[in-house]
Image 1 (spheres, rainbow, N blue to C red):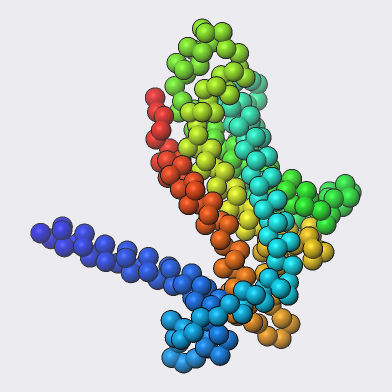
Image 2: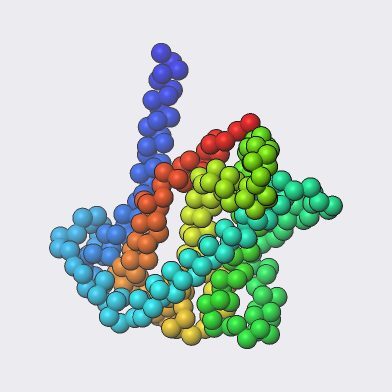
Length: 273
């Protein structure tokens, strides 16, 4: 009985924490559709007396929101695809192919994950400037596509795939590329889906490097564009929350479409020896 009581107590605590975690999201949506005079009323009104689309129209009509949205889609889409492509080959090499210096380089790769992303800002700026890529979306796409976390996660998954599958494929006449594309990649679909959604969300929210690499307003991605909505002396919270609400819709759609694959990928239990 005591154990059951403790379980209920912790369930209640977790439900309360989950509700508290959702309050900022609810406040964002609520403020986006609330008239400006009602935003700072005291006591606060969580349910507006009248809904309005003035903030949504203000974002779309007065700012190049559509261009920012397109830039974010291009950056996130291409960086995710390039990262998956590169990570698959590198992870397969680290997991399945014996070559001199492999373990040492993998340790170097792990060590590089400990370096803060912000440290790369200055050398990346000079590199992109020398290549004449500043103020172009490719200057944001290339560095994001080279994140070592993708190689690490896929390598750990590839190691768990039974070697008997590869041995059987070799007996049937498959070469290494056939094994990779016909066996390893299909079996690793949950892990690839999880990595893909992680890279998409990371690219979608990336702010630091994009702020350095992009200075023209028509080249901004959504995180930088949202920052420009803040005035020098005041903040239009309705406008800002409306823009944040619109910016979160594509990520939520991607998550809803791939939620099953994400959960499978996170479990890492699809294939074990």
